[in-house]
Length: 287
Ligand code: NDP
Image 1 (cartoon, rainbow, N blue to C red):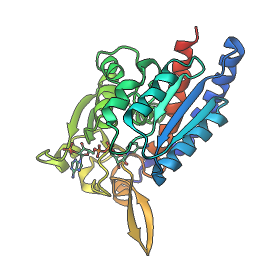
Image 2 (image 1 turned 90 degrees about the vertical axis):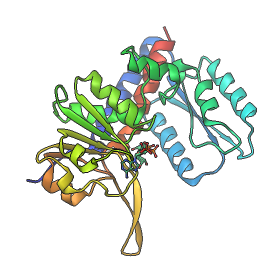
Image 3 (image 1 turned 135 degrees about the horizontal axis):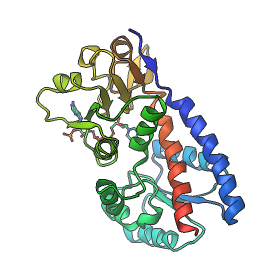
Image 4 (image 1 turned 90 degrees about the horizontal axis):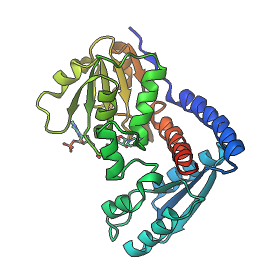
């Protein structure tokens, strides 16, 4: 068997084009341009790249995008007062403080400070709670992107046994919730799971989000299952660093029915979902 590729890069392009059209309509109807402000504290090189990509994607979708760069010595109070200003700025519909923040700033304080209505990362406890109880919420972008990959890839979620490896607040837990919403039967695995390969083998839909490079092997996959690789890590190969996922791609291609690989799977979808969340926030705030 050779797995069908669920191409997150191509799907992200389609969705970004759709959002661009929706943004044009929204502006025509409301006279308001949706706006995202991204705040970056410090000079972490990976964060610089993420922030640049997010700002560019917003601009390409016809949204207004502001970037605020703060020095790495910024205090928590200084950052929170900027977030407060953005919370009260009617031209700003989405606020994203790029994580991680430097040690003197408590991540939790930042997550709590962004008003839930503009929390386009979906990290605020109010949005997490709304997701859990089935209310309309802004939802964490990466798991939201995985659901889009499954739905638009024609994968039946209802009634499926879904196994998620990873239980973080930004991927594993919201992923579990979204799958429950879609009527899957969900198992969440983590570093203390007793028989990880055995749990994975029961999955009709297997989602790996651990950051452990190529941990999921071909014989962990039920023949014909759908595998989604969220993990991003780098290994040295032929003297170069190459990006790989949590899943051993070549083995998974043999075992799975469908595979959304890393790179090229959920990664590109995350930004598309950020744009979607920003437009959603703007729609709710501009009435
Ligand atoms: P975290 O480090 O917060 O969580 C990792 C999870 O994996 C934890 O629940 C941990 O278990 C579990 N885990 C780690 N090692 C093992 C193991 N050997 N066996 C079973 N479970 C294990 O990571 P994130 O959730 O933030 O990210 C996960 C991966 O997804 C990373 O590679 C990250 O780069 C990538 N990612 C990609 C995104 C994108 O595509 N845009 C966005 C976000 C993340 P325990 O809780 O027991 O410690």
